[in-house]
Length: 234
Image (tube, rainbow, N blue to C red):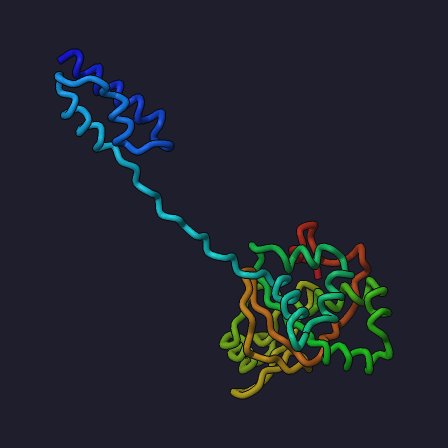
């Protein structure tokens, strides 16, 4: 009996050492080179040690952030947000940080390239002049972003109400007015395409007109925290 216990322990030890490189039956054969004292029984016992394959778990792909959506749409065919992407890349880095933050909760009203062309026609500016003007660029961009996530149903509900219940606060610290009916939705004077894109950190709507902020902050006054979150000032 003493020898039997020693043999069992030896089998278990050898199995543990070579488990990843040899079948259990080979381990048992090496553990019992002699017969006549219950080796068959012991081998059968050792052979019960089996490897169970763990299931391969494929992680769910992360949803794109708002910054990812702008990048992807700018690279699509036809491209829709090429100028917006260039604007975000040229602006205060805290704006890109806010759009890239997966823990943020934002709604972006994203001017299409056509909307920017209308803005340039109206102001006489060029794309390069806008990108070089940090005050104008930063103020424009943060005014297109609302704090919180608002689906189309909520926006239509807001639009059906009267002041001040049809306004939403932006990262600029000022507000956008929503109006409309059952068929159309307007943010200030921009028509909103209500087939929104969902991101991990918010919702993106295309708009046909760049929203003009009521006033401009200096670069050092931008109501953004160091991590891109909106401050309470404004």
